[in-house]
Length: 111
Image (cartoon, rainbow, N blue to C red; front, side):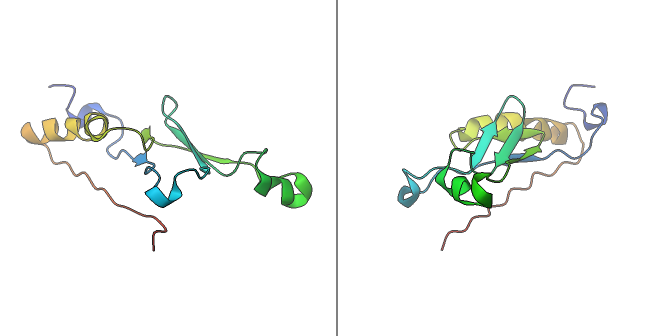
């Protein structure tokens, strides 16, 4: 069996997150999402130095929340890198006769 064999993995489900790049009208804005690709983590919230946190909770601010995934990709990650890291092994598994599913969804607050 090759490395693409899903049974060689301890986990059958893998989760990846890719933060979308800013839209043209959002350019110049600060992001409340930080991506740490090597650690496969995203952190959500404003930094302690942001003006939003300085005015909330008596200047204490809210701590960032971090989440760990199998893959964490920033908005600047090119499509081919998303495919290489998240989908190519699934395609190889399918060609070897295994079942695989890649599900992609989009969620944003666009109007």
